[in-house]
Length: 285
Image (tube, rainbow, N blue to C red; front, top):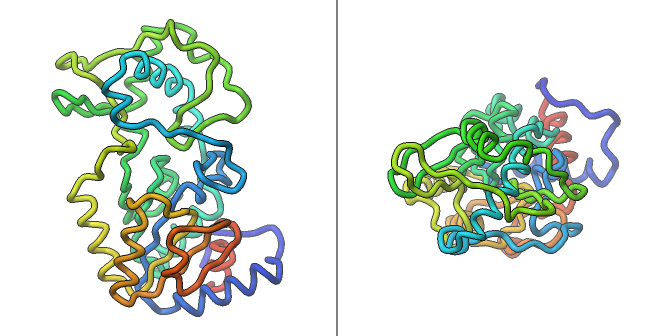
């Protein structure tokens, strides 16, 4: 199988993990569930990794209920979304795309909003929490692209996008740390004047039912569930692991550090997603 290459042979620890993973998944219908740890090698930090700084993810209630908070969010997002938009898939993303193309992975459910799986070439993807690339009006439900909104915000806030980001302080939802936001001017829906919000499921908000049902259907029809880069801290992802375990479907988890799904895991690999998944591609080649 072509598509993923590594510069040097995997270390013995990785080789052993890859062998175990290959033995578990070989010849079985596999669905992958991915989290923020998949994208750290693409320069997008996660919320709960071992080396992640403390973060307080925005809630839906904060966004809709506080004008100043919403202004601060759009100011930071106006800078930060460009970093997520320019991010490129890493070896782990490319590996899952290659495994899907070769028929080793049937589908993918991702908790990430960065679109990196799609950019890498994965085709059957459920973006569980939405994506950064669309904006929704909370009044009329109109959808527009983040690029189009960026042009409007740029006109309303000339030169603001040049605001410096402090180091690499970009959150997975494209929230950037900027020095000052009180002078930023958000914009409203061009159709009805309603409140605009990224088409992302925030904390305190529910994933659309039809999306959850589609994800459960994939898991229930799988023979293996592969979790990569998720701490499974929130029920949004953990419920799929629990369902798989309840149905007797073996679960493999690749994640550095503890996850809430470890008790359900048939195989737990505490290594990086990129090195293990790239090694798996080589193994099935």
